[in-house]
Image (cartoon, rainbow over all chains, first blue to last red; front, side):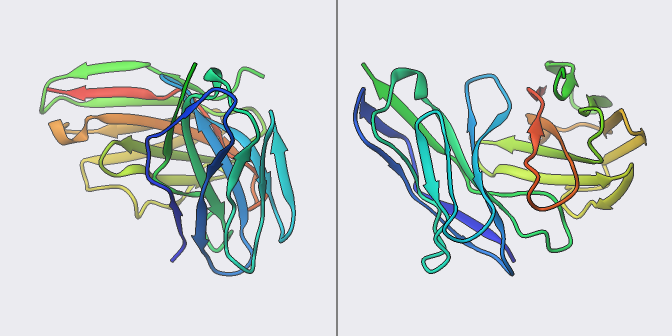
Length: 113
Length: 114
């Protein structure tokens, strides 16, 4: 079945540092890939998405490129801010019989001033 | 649009009591999902509906859990009887049909069963 693996957290960085959160996946067919962000006490919000190989999703300074050859969708940001502190979830939708997303376990990101 | 609306935001109940969680999806969305989030197991898909019809309930933990969607603008998740291990944050999400459509989440209901 489908699965998503992301790096364990928490990840602690200083403000303005470069961020990478790794995500790899296993899926049938050609899934769509997503990154969601969850701030304390809130639901998940879509951060960015990519629907086919080599697509790059971007939003709010975050980027991720759909790499079919390595089955990866790593999240990057060049200079993080304290306000980026949150839990980040990688997810996929292979559309194979269920329209729900398969989520990774989430990576807690802590940015220190 | 107001987004996905869930109620209540917090629910504290005693073991054995019935709990009903409510969800109003985004107007026009035809898929609705119930997820449960815990520290141990992360996000788990419990059940999803398409056009008000339950499609996959394989994630529902046991018979104590039931979900309904009587119309396109309302869904409930019921736990009867509740147990302490049901304590979690329950999220409702909605989307347009199709693998390219993202899910839109509500702010969740934090359930505590004592």
